[in-house]
Image (tube, rainbow, N blue to C red; front, side, top):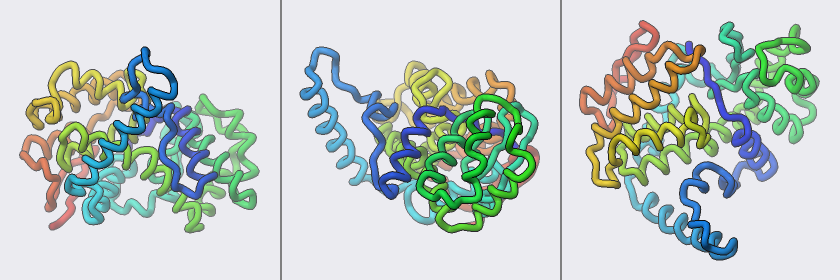
Length: 303
């Protein structure tokens, strides 16, 4: 199983919004999505904000008029299973709410449906936000220790007891719903939206989602928007007049390069024997039945 390494700051912002607003807030304007469509520097602040709002409204209208793609209920289930095969070597994605382990790759404990890591800030941000809203959570006593180990592989202050507290918390539907909100609002919805704006079908939407979960929604060169920038320099998106398969191959190449640059992401099965396999078989709609390999194991989603 590979390890999710996420960008901390965007997670912290989004988690705070999710828990403080009941999960209905949009991403802040400082997010990579907003930054990608910022107005030119000559505009005043008010003018730029108005231009951003108008452009976003126009984009939202375009996205709303498109087929649901990966956002369709049936395809969401496919997405969760594909992601779980990469993150937990299972199709039973619901079992991943309670999952927690240290694989010895230097990122500490990895837990939950999108792989919050104690060593890469995202677990701290998530647990801090959740326990602020739910101070009786079994995880609350471990917040000081999570702050101390953030950025390291250390378990100091977490053992014994933290893994049991995470699993106990995962019995609570409120805790599971909190994980869902972070997955959906910080990763799934922005990824699908961007893919649709780039003219990509359901497979492309999953490719974007998986890359955003794995590398984080950052604009850095090893974040999702950095990978997309590299891909767009090598090939046009469909919206830009390019060929969908060509662009997706280039995007997967760029995503794979980032994975190989990180010592904890050397196994690129999620690209090589899953996403690229679907692309090579021209399944741009990601239509079941689907069969793929992950870390040597074979998985199937029937029709």
